[in-house]
Structures are given as C-alpha cells and as structure tokens.
Image (cartoon, rainbow, N blue to C red; front, side, top):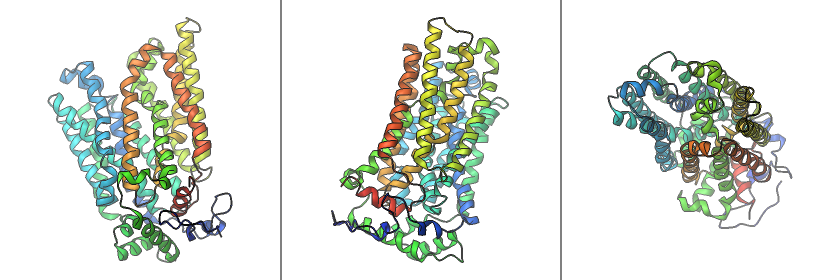
Length: 487
C-alpha cells in the first residue's frame, strides 16, 4: 500500500486510489486481473461516438477536392476560397471556448447531439449555397460542430471503457476521422461539391439517431448526483454478471472528493495540484500543431507542385497520387489503435515524433538541394515519400494520443474548463500554422520543414521528461498521482 502523504488544500493525497500502484508508478496486478471484459454495449456506444470523428475527417478533407468546382461555379477568387478553407479553424476556436463547459452542463450525449445539429446545418448550407456568404456560414458551422466533437468524443469513450482497453478504444476515434478524410477525398474526385456536402451529412444523422440508444457517461452521472442512473449505467456497460461495487465506490469517492474542493472554473486549472496535468495537456497540443500536420493536410498539392511533382505526372492526377498517402495514413492509425494499449502511450508518442522529425529533415534537405539545382530529378519522388512517411508517423501516435492523454489526465471537477483551454490551444495553433504556412513556404521551403523538424524533436524530449505512462491505469489513480507530482 502506498505511503500516506499529508493533506494539502483539503485534498487527501494518500488514497485508496493509490493502493494498487507499485513503487515505480505502475498499476498492480490486481487491477488488470479484475478488469471486466468488453461488452457489446461498450462497442456499440464507441461506434456511435466515433461517427463524430468521421464527421471531423469529412469536414477537414472537404476543401481540397472541392476547390476547383466551388471556385468555378461560384466565381470565387483564390483569396475568397482561402477564407472558406481556413474559417473551419475559426469555428473550432469559437467551440473551444464553450465545449468543456457545455459538455459538463449538458452531458456527453447531449453535447454530441447538439454539435451534430450544427454540423448538419453547415453541410446543408454549403450544399445549397448560392453565394460566398452561405458557403462561409456553412463552413463556420462545421467548425463549431467539430470543435465540440474533437473534445467530447475521446472524453466520452475514455469514461465508458474499462482501463485495460481504454487507450485503444479512444484511439479508434482518430482512425474513424482518418477514414472520413480518405472517403471524402476519394469521393471528391467523382461527385460534385454539392453532392459531396450532402454525403457529409450522413454520419451526422447516423450519430444523432444512435445517441438515443447509448448510455450517458457514468462519471458524468455521478458528478451531477444521479446515483441510481450511475450504478445502472455502469452495470450495463460492464455486464450483468460483473461486480461493479469496487469501481463504483472508487469513482464516487474520487468525484466527491474533488467536487468538494472547487467548482469547474478556468482559474481552478492554475492551482499547483493541476500544474502537471495542464503542462501535459496544453504542451502536447501546441507541439502537435506546430509540428506541421495541417500544413501537409491542407497544402500537400502546393508542396508537390513546388517539388515539380506535377510536371512528371500531370496536375490532373494529383488527387489520385494523394489517395495512397491517405490509405497508408489510415492503416497506420489502425495500427495505433492496436498498439496504444499494448506498447503504451509514451513509446508511441516518441516513435511517432521521431518519424516526423526524420521526414521533415529529409524534406528540408530535398528542397535545399533543389534550390542548389542538385538531384532535381530525384526531388519529386523524395518529397512524396517523405510526406507519406510523415503522415504514417503522425497517424501512429501524435494524431490521436494527445487527445487520448488529455481525456485521461484531468480530474472530473476541472475537466470541462481544462477541455476548453486545451482545445483552444489546439485550434489557435492550428490556425496559426494553416495561415502562416504559405508565407513561410515562400520565404524558405527548407527552413519551413527544418522548423517543423525542431518542434517534432522537442516533442520527443517533452514526452520523455514530462508525459507519464497512462496505459492500464485507472483514471482516478492516474489523476491523483499527477495532482501530487509537483507538490
């Protein structure tokens, strides 16, 4: 049993939540041995939740294949279409200010439902648009919808799943997002941009209907005092024959302890006991975005053209060339789902960041050699291979694990405020990168990718020094240990 630590700020720091933790911070064997098996309801609830992730992928991938059709039909200039593409992140920024509070007040299910209403309205606005205004309003509504979804989906999955498979199930939301991105990109080469927008509505509607058949998060239910619903929901999620008494007691005691300390306000996050969790959550989001993934997602065609890739295969086939890159990315994300609870979060984050660092360095050197007029015939192939390697490495860890870890490290009493702050950090950095990339690329293509490489290298050090391993650890035990790590 862990050593009792004196109380600080009224929070009992030595807790039964730590009793299964060994001296090196890993959970004891008893935790894993008593962990319940996966029930059909957990699987079904996860599938309904990741419909929201599918919508995120569809919205993120829509602007690239629809660019020529929208600009031609509505007479948009390049600047006007750039605004249309980037306004998605503005909607995400707006949503990040309210998504945590909204999820805490309304519950996880209602938050997903309302976000899908926004997304559905946005898709219809785009599909029926007759001018730029309706187009931009639809894109903004899409941004608001996915800005809520990118927070609430991993939180909901983390709160309903047993700890032994929590990481893999939470990582599945990124796989779903990647599939949505791949599907919308592929269909965009076949159907018109209006039909493509209507296709984007389908997963929205599916999730809205599916939400009627899945339970609310048991941790949210106990947080708002719905005791009977809490126990009934937890029993349904774990199975009728499973004894939930210990898990229910741990969740209830832990939630009540933190709820007595403070209400969920943004200023609560800056107390010393939340410092480690805050550094981890915000730090990973900033490093994720400044590592450059949106530059590759939004401007891959521009990067290929700058490498003279289009001269060898033709501009028309550019979309076809990106399909294998997206396919490999989806396969890597599937591998990440499998490995998250096998290899652990920290190793995957470091391997992912190392791959991104290496590919960014080689990309920078490729453009540097092109500027010197050396190996110009090899540059297009090298650039394409590096972008594929970067995408695979990103999907293997950095694409999803910051959100997985964010859903795990914050206590329930500040999870709403923390979610808003972390999401705001992510969307702010996303907008900065997507807005500044073209200017940086014109300034220096080699310099741009070497900056990305430095950020990705910093991510390796950040993970090694500050990010704890969360694999196989109960949320309550993990969050309690983080609360005392800097005290």
